[in-house]
Length: 179
Picture (cartoon, rainbow, N blue to C red):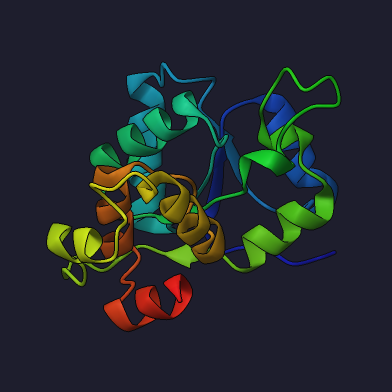
C-alpha cells in the first residue's frame, strides 16, 4: 500500500514503528520511547503538530492512555486513532501493543482516523446519566459497547464524556449507537 499521510504518526516504540512501516512504508513515524516522554520529544511533537499535524496511535492500555493525554495536553489538538485491545494482544496473551495488531486492522484504523479538533460541548454528564452510561450497575457494559461501536477506545465515565466531546459526537449519534 502506498498511502501516505500528511500527518506524522506517533507510536510508543520501535516495534510499533516497524509494524506501521510494513503497511505504510512512506509514513513518517515518531516514537515516544514509552510513557516517560522526554521534554525534547514533546517539543518536537509540538512543532510537528503545528507544521503537519499528528496522528496518535498508542497502545490500548493504561500507559498508552497516559501518553495520549500527556501529548494532547502539551501539543494541543491532534488526531486520534484507536485499535481495540483485543486486536493488540500477543500470541501468549501477556503483552498489549500496536506491534501485535494485524496489518489489516492497523490499515483500517489509520485510514478511518477520527479528527479531534472540536472544542464545542455536544454531550453533558447528565446526558450520560440519562442514557445509563454512568451511575448504574450496567453502565460499564453499556460504555464498552458504545466505545467499541464508535471506535474511540475504552473509557470510564469521565473519560467517555471528554472523548465524546473531543470527537464531536452529537446526542443523535450517541442515541443511534445505544439503541
